[in-house]
Image 1 (spheres, rainbow, N blue to C red):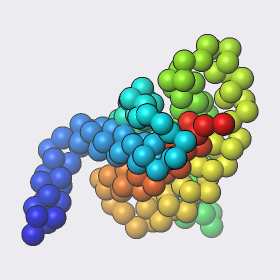
Image 2: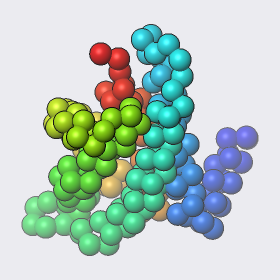
Image 3: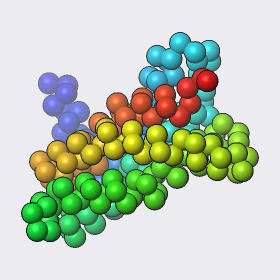
Length: 180
């Protein structure tokens, strides 16, 4: 009963204020994913608030805000080409263009800044981590996005992505901040 009431309240917030609701959801889920990763990592001695803030900010801005507009554009403009159905076109365009050109560089910049690196060291660290980040992202997100774009209505794409991102943010946090 409580779950149904929460789902109805969330649906109402999503209908009334979709962008704000998606930003809040993205921020909350990203922060939770990082917190779980930090708590599960035996090498993490103390909780890092700057690290968590990095995830909260990135989750709200990228997952919540950016994907609200990006997924809307993809849904409107990617309706299929030849034998490639629209859902596959949307997932492949997002993963093949947006992730390598925007998502990965932006995240690596924020993660490096969170670790207190200079711009020169952020770039050097980004060069070392970029391929692993993009490949890991593809392994996780290509099948998830194919499924979501194929089965979900556009208004539920970002909230569903936020839920899947709980797992992804634990992976991303571990990949990006694990102790060496």
